[in-house]
Length: 123
Image (cartoon, rainbow, N blue to C red; front, side, top):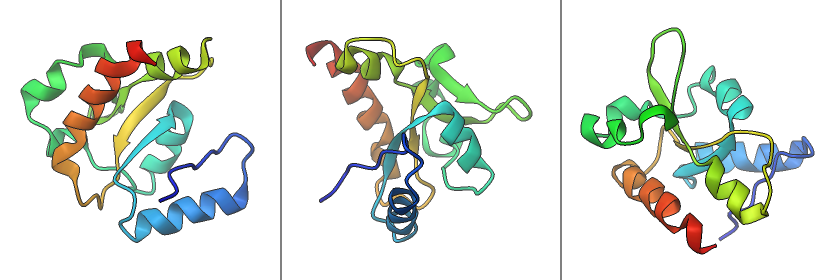
């Protein structure tokens, strides 16, 4: 399994690989920079978290939830602290965990985010 898709260099082949595997249902969740998340929302690539998570689950993330300004729907959960602690410095971007719209395991998204946020201090 190849879980490495980096968009830092705007590599066309990496983007196409990511899009192809996503369309095929081979990608469930992403950690993605905020600007990329916003770009992909127009293509309806990600599931609305309001639809896949219980309200109380979503509320526990408070201000870490990315909501679209227009309709206040939730699309991602900020995990920048994980990226920054892994790199050892502030990456300068906000990174969000998001669930792909055709995920085979959307019910596990909350557990995925909880795992990331609870284990970041051990990295």
